[in-house]
Image (cartoon, rainbow, N blue to C red; front, side, top):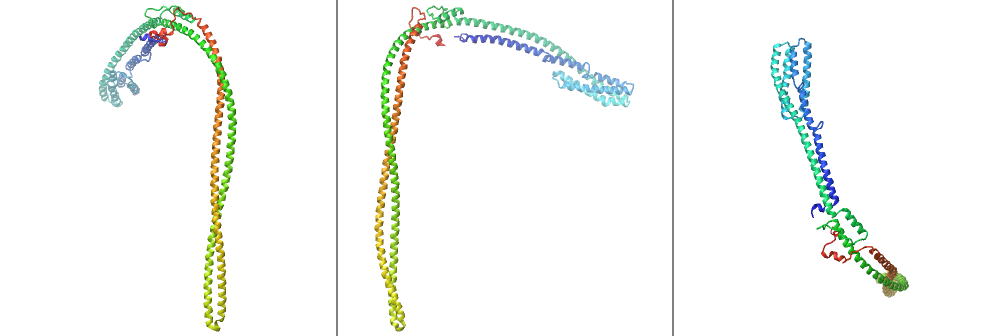
Length: 542
């Protein structure tokens, strides 16, 4: 398919409008460019005015020093000093004007040949002329030196002539340039006019060609007259699918071809819909009957689930009570274990105390043994003292008495020490037996503590199991409640499905009446017949 056939109608009109707009834009742009070139203060206007201003500055002065040359001659022939002074002031003014205009033209964009003549060849002798006038000629006149003044004038004259020759060339060049600019402007106007006419003709030609191409493409896209296409559309909209649509030979892409394809597809679809409606009506009746049976069974299942949920609630309450009792027993066992642990600790303290008493008793026995030894030695010493006193005779009688008393005391101390040692020995034996009993009691208390701890652990496991059972039963209860709710919802949905099936049956009847409004042709092979050739409808292709 070529590019014009692939373009939409809006794209074609956009191209047509774009061609018109582009042509007028080019036409307007070229006109604006021409007017800009030729308008007042435009490029050509500026060049023409510049040339005329240049000539105006030269003929008459100030850029041309002819008046300055004349004033110098008048100064030389002046009859009075006052006249000479006035002419001298005039010469100074002329020099100032010349320098001002020279500065102006030095800043302008001039042609190279004119700039060379004006700014160099005419300016250099002019500057030399003024220098000679003010440095030599005027001072000689003021001194009344006619010879020096004449000599200065003779040197100024060739400077003036050189300046004048350059000025004459400038005038000729400026005049020629002005004439050339005016001729160029006239030629540009003629050329611009021709270009504008050519652009206008080209835009009109392109617009006409695009319009003709758009019209042909539009007619080819429609496949016939728009009124014929509108009549076919109205008849299809009215349900008439039996009319014959006439196409041009070889037409397989126009709107009429698409409408013919649509007519065939719609005819097949309506036929298929009529067959499907009959099947839907039969199926909806069967669905409604099945839904009623399913609704009854669902209601019975919902009642059974309600009874199961009630039993599970009672079981949950019982298990929860068992868990609470287990937690209470666990708390009591923990308390008993704590008390037994405290008793065991106290028994350990008693054992430690009995051990300390036993150690102290042994220490006392050792001390008593030491005292008994000291008493025995004292007795021997007293015996020795008595022997020595007997040997001393009368003089040792008093000492013998003392030795006897000391011996008696030593014997009494030894006797008391032996009694105390026997008592301490009995006490140590009793303490050792008590320590053994306390140790046995401590072992028994430890066994009790271990047993209580094991009982506590068992009760804790029972409690945890009861809690897990209660939690599991609660989950089961919730699941049963959800199942009950879902079953009730299913029952409601089944009722709604039954109602929907009934409504579907009614809608199938309505659809039968609606499809009956379409008038089909004598042959209707179904939608599969359209696609047997392997070609999709045009609407699907696009």
